[in-house]
Length: 114
Length: 116
Picture: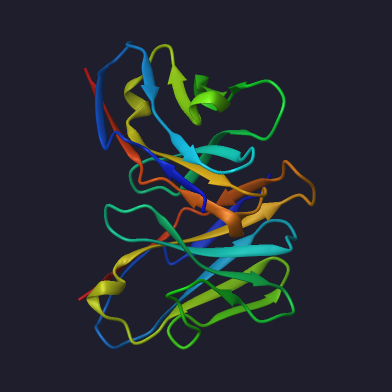
């Protein structure tokens, strides 16, 4: 069965520092991969997605993610975080690009140190 | 893209009562989904709602507890019946836009329910 793991429950980084949020998936074939962000009191916003092609995916708000098949990973990165990036980040995996088949990770809460 | 509006955004409900959450989309979509996010947890799919057919429920969720309507291609409702404190959660509506590989899933801002 497919699954997704976000090993970091909570991460704190200083404003302006670089960020990497980890995501590992388990699936027999090439999955469809997503990163969503949930700000306090808000719904989920899609940051980026990977289906095929270039393994480095650019998203909104300056985020990018790299698909590494050999490591079964899809880590989210940002070169310089802003205080407004403080939020909960969810990695998700799907067998098909369908919300009925999406499995979400447990989330990583990002705090920003002034 | 799709803009999804949910009502209510927040509510405090009495134990034993029922509440209906509305989800309105600004474009016609085939598939709509309802998720639950319990405090501090990730999202769990409740059911898939396609227009003109019965909703399909995931394991652990039943129609008597979470009846869903899907009267047209832009609207759906989820009712949380006979609520208990364990139903205190965020309920999110989601839609899938596109018919092909690479389509996108959008979420509403959620309905935050607290059962007392």
